[in-house]
Length: 291
Image (cartoon, rainbow, N blue to C red; front, side, top):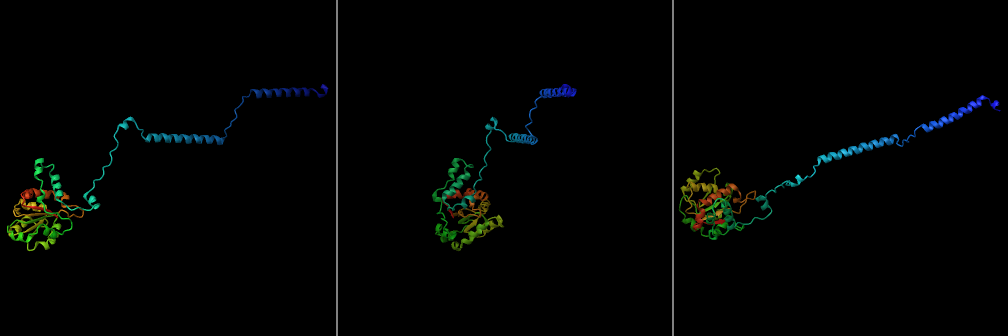
């Protein structure tokens, strides 16, 4: 039978056995490769996640660099000073409250405050005025004429007795030239035959006012403290016949300021008081009224 199949069968059979064995040995010799679980889209996804994390980390690092960390030295530093509150002006205060009529204590407080750093304690005591030095104050219900009639009931007799030149019996002090003209108009019902002279610096020279005071008898003077003080210094105005000093105390300008609230007017007013009026008040020769 072997002969029938011939030599080819044997040859074929041997080759098949050999090939099977070789295939088994090759399979055994080849290293086992790990299965590549990640596909191409999964790789791309992991790369984008890595880059996103890296960018986020970089941003956080930048923020940490920008925001300063508190250290021990920073804790020792004093905090930033707070903004100072804007001081309320006289206009702010008075616009939210009703103005009150002036009284002798108001004038005394203004005088004391002004001279507190200019006079000694003993000299400041000498500046204090008694209540007897003052006339009754305006309660904001009077006009100028009605107020003067109240505080000067014997005016007609007083004006007839006044005969001295370069002097006045009644002196009204206000803050401006315009206010002076207004007050002179309001005197019509009170003055009678008395002569009134305006005493302010606008458009009028001191020399002209000195000549007017020397010409005839002047009963009432109305003006600003600056010009009145200048006339007293030049001896153009005498205080010998003065009996009444009326201050336009309660009147307020567009900014709701009184006469003593305007710095330059206040300075001139204090000079006027020092020029001899305070001494005359102490000697009971002059009475002060707050209109």
